[in-house]
Length: 448
Ligand code: PHE
Image 1 (cartoon, helix red, strand yellow):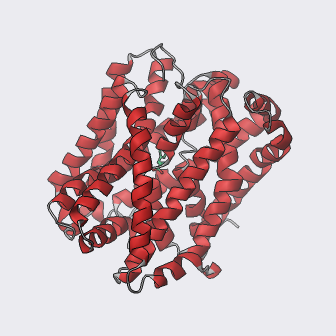
Image 2 (cartoon, rainbow, N blue to C red):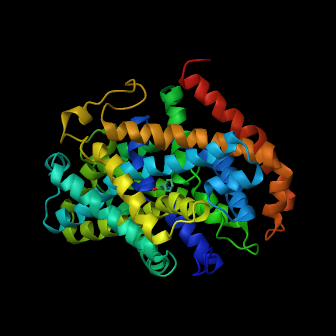
Image 3 (cartoon, rainbow, N blue to C red):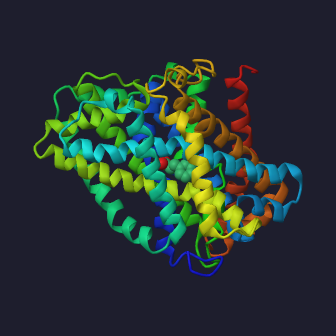
């Protein structure tokens, strides 16, 4: 973003990196493997990939187009096109979702940060003691939010874009190395089998909802983030190729994470359905098994923390840009106010992994939908459910209210090729996306 009140990305590659930085994060490396593990492996992965292609990419194009057209935040964008309570609500819903996600995501990001030091100290095995310690949990969560706020406070373009350019490729290379290492362990082929040979009987309606939720989550859709980032995009930029590049990068990294985790976990006799702890239990063991493991492990968690940071920045940017555009607050003041609010709503998640029984066995949602702890509840409620509702509202809005034809004209600026495939895109945003989401929701709630 530039320095004027409403800036623009410095360059095409600057935007793709910022967008990919927002998309690639804990969703790929922490959430994708554990959700795949919980939902039975390969069949889930196939459905996930189909959702990325047929729902995710079209929705990303729609969000970016809406943002670029209006040059406004999530609420302002809906409002400018149709000033009706339902659509203003849709914008707010995105802001609330982004705060809800940030509140639990920040807790896990705090873990990744803490694991840098655990690796350096050679303590790979103390997951339980670590997550049940309230001081660590709240302290690390607070530190991570402070980093996030400090960057959003100062402007995104200089610091983080530059670092992301160097560190994201490093993460990629390190992951390649880890794939090779994990697949040479004895017994690792069972993990590959789990990951690649589908058993479609495991696909319950909840698994399908998780697949679509995870596709939107990983691409950062359904909560106004791509609308906000699109608002900093110039008319010269190509929305189609940017969306495809971001989605491709994001998906490749998630699939790569699976090629590390599943072979490693089967080789070590762990349970693929272990839930949110999966990556934090399996990877440290893998590192401490290898030569120079505590260094490599620490490096990995440094890179993962940065990947998480580029995502938390984008989540915080959603409410901040709303307050700056619509309420004329100063960026500097509102950043800290929103961060403090988020910190408070995240405390139950931070204490829900054994520190406080009430939050650990919260159990408000039925067990088919979520594990009993508060963090898993938040992950389901915001990371799956709200994001899917948000994408449903967005697809109806862009497809029918703004109009798929008007939206296509916006996408076509900067992308000549788009006019050849716009029929396909219009069909997807008007029909496929809303209908598929509605069917999934009805079947999860046992209405059909
Ligand atoms: N896509 C990010 C990830 O996979 C998470 C995220 C969700 C970021 C929503 C921004 C908005 O880690």
